[in-house]
Length: 420
Image (cartoon, rainbow, N blue to C red; front, side, top):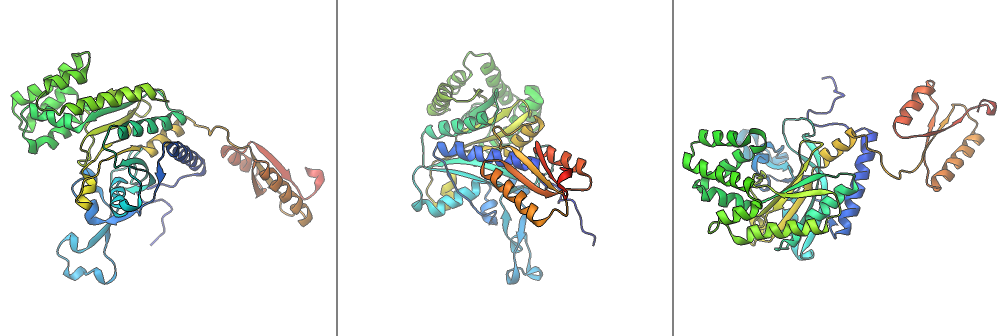
């Protein structure tokens, strides 16, 4: 079988120019989140298949890269179901591993616990622009904080980081799962159909309100309920304060603290934000994960035309592991999409050290080579990035390649001093 130079479909190689930007972004993320009190952790890339398939990961559970049992545990002849063959899987996000981690180490961790986790995740998805089968995620989570302080801190930390990376005029969309459920209940939709309603509602920005009406009708929902449901959205658009309007229309169905909490979060963020962005209430925001229990939010970037991150509150997830619920809330930056935007905009790392390339012709005397290496070491100690390499026959092409990597100066060393 011939060997392939190409990576597996949906995976990709990362060239040095992009890697430098990725390393810079990671350093900004860690430094900024650290100032907000978040602590770095690490979890394995492989999780128990039961943890990954617990009916809380939404559509992602259909995209798991599953791992066969090994050795004596793998009994192909006796296997009747997939469960007989599989015992693990590559993580599809960082939230499930974090919750397992917290459940295992809660007694060793502070409360509330502010976690920062960065790492690759895997989904057997259809590759497209900004979406791969292996990609980096960057999550911050607060476990053990029941109040809106968690949401406020998460949004401020995330937006401050984006501001430091040069992003501005983006939008934070915010909603609450309790509002979604109250609107569905007020419209008379049966509770067991909520997820189907929300899947259709999530398409609002693509198919419009008439498209949503058509899909709800095609799904068999009653016309009166559909009409009432869409009237809530239209009324909110016409109202001066859409959230206050909804709170009034849903009185008796919606918990008052849901609307009050969103107001508190938005006002606090607006008053203390360090970046240029807008935070807006959006009742069409759904988020796909079924583990969300309260506030949900998403980053909308005009440069990308879609979501570049999101998160929310998932108060019931720790209880699935321990039997005791712990308040939890998290926010994930769409790392790969952020990098894509920066690369397309020609981002240059600010304050980058000067780069110098030493090109040495083959045959330079040993004594001269020692002098060159000592000179390179001296420049490195002074803060310059120095690359030492043999001079290629096609020196012009070699210098063009190095210039593309950011080397602005060249020192050339030949066998004969007169040729310098």
